[in-house]
Image 1 (spheres, rainbow, N blue to C red):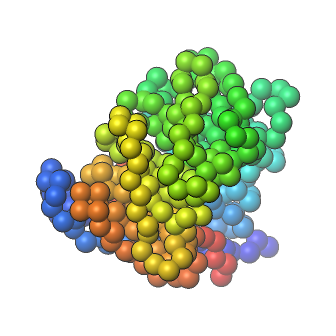
Image 2: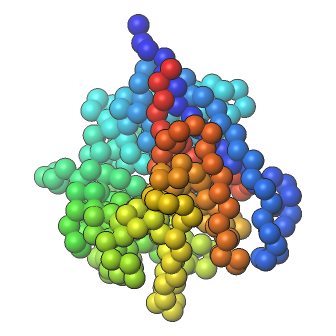
Length: 323
């Protein structure tokens, strides 16, 4: 008999008041409301990342059990879609086609789950590729999917042909978070190497950009509407921002005694969201006021690894909790 397990999916609602103020850059943001749903599945899933699905639900990667999960906040029901033997998915994002695109370290492949038909297609890494420890993906302006592998690779899945190519990353081990700018450029960061890098989409080569804080542990990156790159620094506890147009950096320390910045996301109003493992909280950072708002988690050790969103909502996943 399977053991029932409990995880929590979190949704931070910005509300209609916040949306009505979106055009006023210097208006103080509206208060944040948090909702949390217990997610019960018939087996231990090992949830890692979560992402909004186009139908109003939430996808999540079940790393331990090898599934793509889907949760409906309206009904509280969850569904598990098996990805295949040896599957161990890490990241999930919505593609331009409305499908779920998954970086699957166990399958050594990118997996597409069609939505809503739940069809499966795997795009394996080239034969002979050493174990990549696939992490996260992002679509560029041409619709190609770029992805990171913590073992030291950066790769691309060409949308027109389905061909997958990989390149050795500068600095070796460490590629982790990845994002696209509004122009469709791709940036990634190295956790072990403590840098960010921009990909030349024609050649696949990466140009490294060093943050001002050494050994800061750049964990994830996200772009705002101006193409500025926001970085969550795991080791330093900083939130930093790089402006590629000027080459300049700005750095802010997260509030608290021992902050550990993990995930970062920029919403449609250019508010920056950061999860802090050290303080068991989410922070909303307003760049115009250079001000942090703290949203504490109601349970201990939430350990949010990924933040994504849709208009008016930020979606995250907290760490596994058994019942």
